[in-house]
Figure 1 (spheres, rainbow, N blue to C red):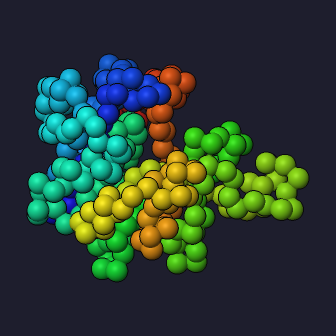
Figure 2 (figure 1 turned 90 degrees about the horizontal axis):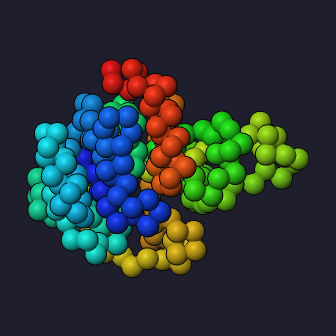
Figure 3 (figure 1 turned 180 degrees about the vertical axis):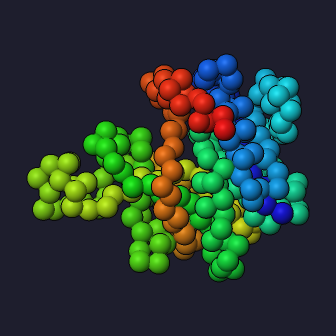
Length: 254
């Protein structure tokens, strides 16, 4: 069984109550849930929340939600907490609660490698960076990967560093630079292995938990997607998401 779990944290440090923030007429968590439900490969979609207000809201629009302890440190730990009670779930997808416009097709793209190759333990998505703003933003992690599409490193800095480029524009012209789309697909054992390991040095330095996997030899398959994403991490991101929705809402609701 393939289960999509959406960790939703009310006590977000940068944007308190983020899952309940309205985008158009719906709260963000509803947008994320409905977007994830368009996946053709997920058997279930569940919200794992730290606050009863989120649970009641999700159940109110017909979704499934599970209350988890509010002292759980990360989204991956939160989905592991839920997955332990679901022994039939052999593939678990961590769908970020702050990705209201995630495409069902993107989720399916990330899942597919695990269906065709038993050796792959974890997969995630990357999208080619097209703008200087994304290139320069430390809130948008970058990823480099090998010729077999396995991650080599993730960073908040620009990677690769294009030595011959005289400007950011030239960097984009001379090299393919990718941003990481924060969606993870885990085999069951890989999820529990990952969440049982203590945070690592590079993870602490970059504040990127996926580096814990690389530092401990867990390979991450990168799937390049052509679809755009819009993560909401700050009040400015929320306003940008609202403007995006008003502009493209007819397409998003198809």
